[in-house]
Amino acid sequence: MSYEELPNEFDIVLLGTGLVTTITAAAFSRIGLKVLHLDRNDFYGGPFANFNLEAIETWKKRNQVMYCCGDIIELLIKSDVARYCEFRTVSRVLTLLKDKLEPVPCSRADVFASKIVSLIEKRLMMKFLQFAADFENHPEEYEDHKNGTFKDFLKSKKLTPNLQHFVQHAIAMVDDSCSTEDGLTKTKKFLTSLGRYGNTAFLFPLYGSGELSQAFSRMSAVFGGVYCLMETATHILADNEANCCGIITSKGQKISCKYLIAESSYLPSNYVQRLSQGKISRAIFITDTSIEPSSDEDLTLLNFICKEDQSRPVTVLEIPSSACVCPRNLYVVYLTRKSDSDDPKEDLREVQDRLLASIDGASSDEESRPHILWSMYFTMEDWSEVSMTEEALGRVMVSSEGGDAGIDLDKCVPEAKQLFHSVCPDEEFLPTPPNPEDIIHVDDTESAVVSGAAGDFEQGNEDPEDSQQTGPDSSEVVNEESKCEEKDSEASNDKVEQ
Figure 1 (cartoon, helix red, strand yellow):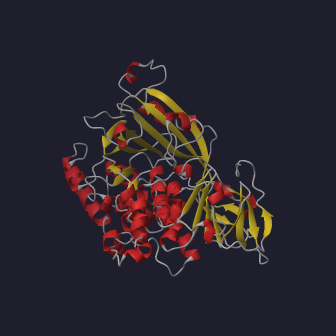
Figure 2 (cartoon, helix red, strand yellow):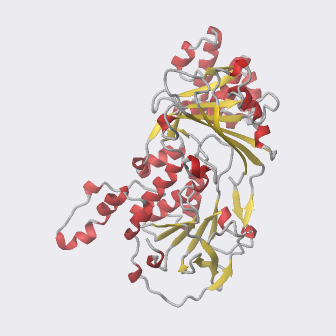
């Protein structure tokens, strides 16, 4: 849609197309609210976006996996957004044990087939996993350790150091500071996800995590949401009661709205309070072979425990060409680690030295390791938890932009629900859409009324920006004299691009 065609009045305006905001936009559009979604970039996804090799030089990809029984998968199924995506399984979870990469025995079959676990350990492992899968109903088993760490709790269960490593670092994937209850919760989440889509606990979207943002944007567009890339807000409009009542776009158009929801980088700095602290060290490599070659193109997840600092493990995600992220016979490797350092290369050096060959490949023991064909290192601030300050206008809400070191995307769902219910407390969050086949057509004269939903579904294969005709027509909007006062967003140049 060209700029001149943008309507002047909406219920909700959203800035930034990260996963939280796109889920929220889809929920608002689904219940019939008029939604305008802007992004200053020329792509969807924000920090979750996917790029080709040329484009990534100016931006950073962020890819995470999804638990098969996690909140994001349940939402994709319930809302029917899953039909806009394709997935493949994380077919292999590895761990570094005695300086050797080993597959993690998760299911009963894996445990008893494993050659790195003794017979006694197999029995102990199965007993513990059976307890963890139903731990809420056996509080007496962990009540005395509820305020302690998960690491100490595992020791109290008489698990061998070998089994403690598997459970803490390869199944629960938690650090030494994790509480007993959180560790058990994550262990159960892993176990309940096993078997839903094969012998794995994780899924990964083909083409990368950015596909999820585009899928929810498409759902919003199907139900009337209007999308406009390379556009943002330069001013926030306020009424006499200091509530947001609209925006002025970077093209100079005044648009009224009842609520403004924006990712933190789109708002003035005095509006947003950062709750999460620290930084994230990240690296992306393109390699010529897998870190653990096999006959299959495995999508591999590894929680790497560093010797020099075990409190900050490194998440290693290796993605093959079958996931549609790179050319055939190549792999993309992502490293993510919590960090207080400004030198990500040094922060991730131990992992790189252990798993990958050096650039010159001088050492003979590196011949079998993957060779780095391309690399990128960078540091991100953790903006995964944010809130509004008292200086912010009313009816302005902030969405986090991610940046945490977690392995999965489930944190996005409760945040999107909270934003949605702040505006519509009595509405259902992203209900299942109607089946087009169930819509009854009365006659030709009423086709415009009864074919609306079916027509929207037919447009579902279009790009969100091409589906904007489903939104309100500009000729139907009443242009009343605005009583709002302009309030400069005071955003810096890197927050508002013309």
